[in-house]
Length: 574
Image (cartoon, rainbow, N blue to C red; front, side, top):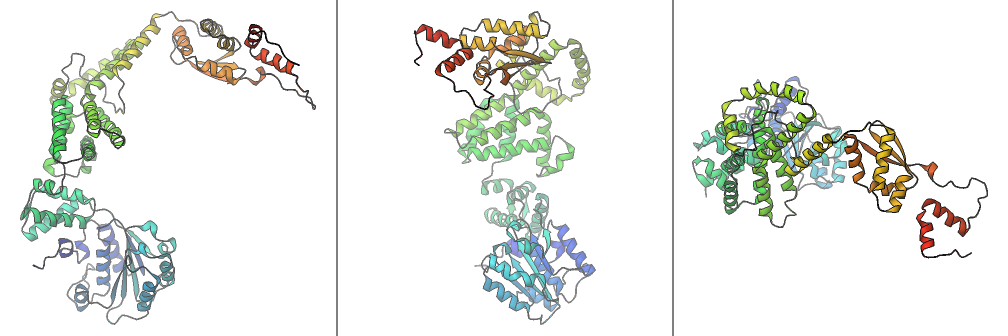
């Protein structure tokens, strides 16, 4: 077998300038070396594969380098640097806390701190995955970490900063490493391709960078895997095949079919995705990311958030110009609802297909909703609507031709017309039945004569409604209610919770009042007036109530009790 070395080790940075995407860390360390303000304990924290241990090793190498460069980089030529590169340096000790996390291991490390360096100025102790140390090991390490010898420097590295006890954090100078950006990964992979005489498509390297999710080490591992699969040329097709990733073309075709309301194309594309072995929920996540990228392309200020190749970026921008904001935002809302309920769906394929069909007719639903809003506004204030239309005309004329052609292409229905309102971000669209019902209700309100809004007329309508009630107990509750007006609010004062519940159950009351006064903002508040309730005895020695007294109180509260007694010829036993 050949002595193959993986790219993560072969191209591991040996100088600060080679570290990818962590300029804020390397610049701070070099300035500390330059000003001789170097701390005795460092904590490097951040995600996996972003260069924490690499920076720790470079810093340790610089501290003992015999010929430090003008930019405070290790020379990699002196005896100290060579011994470190060959893992033979006695001045640099690395400890993996994941497997050496006991008190005994920390005590052994503390014993090594006692001895001064044989060569060089410092003894550097690098503890990787330090959050894996036990509580007892942390406590044993505290005193040495706080007051080490002048020649000892500790560099701790961890991916889980929150697991480290505060007493350790307070003794260290903390450096937060960030995730590597996709563009930085692509540039680094392109340099490696030049070194290895490998040709690679830019879109293929972007896919590798996105799949790595901010970890450069993962990107290099994926890169080695793709090279083993495809040889000396890495194509976009090889990457998506090897990594089992849905092609961008599927999403572009799907969105295009949405805009054209082509249900057949949508169903066939989704069927092809399932036949290729992709799960529906994976497709949903990818579609949501695609629509998010289209929203990003809407504004030049957010275009830099699109992490794709240049040719693919142009394709995203072209489709983004054809898709209205309301369409994209409603799609995201539907996808989110579908994803939330996906696990509970018994027929998962049908569940996703229903969501896709809903997204197909978003454009038509938005047009119907806007038409209903325009009609309502015209009825309420025709003068204002005329003024709005006169303002909207120049905006329609300024729309570029591709948008107008697209609207004509995807709006074949005679009920539809190009949107003249500003595109509004909506999370839910009302149904056609709801819009028609609202229009009919407003029309009926306007056709009826209105009454003057005062207490007498409100009491009159209240009594008219009570007269239509067939249940005697409810009718009595209405008759015993005192009404008070506060602007558009009717306050109904009742004597008990029973009467309150009876009035609340009358759903047609508010509708009749709003119809009579032609006001849709009339509200009803029901209050229990304690003064109307039966007063309690106030004497210091309360009088014991007889059975007859209790019966009389019951008849006073509800006169129907008396009719009940007479109907069944009941008598009260003393």
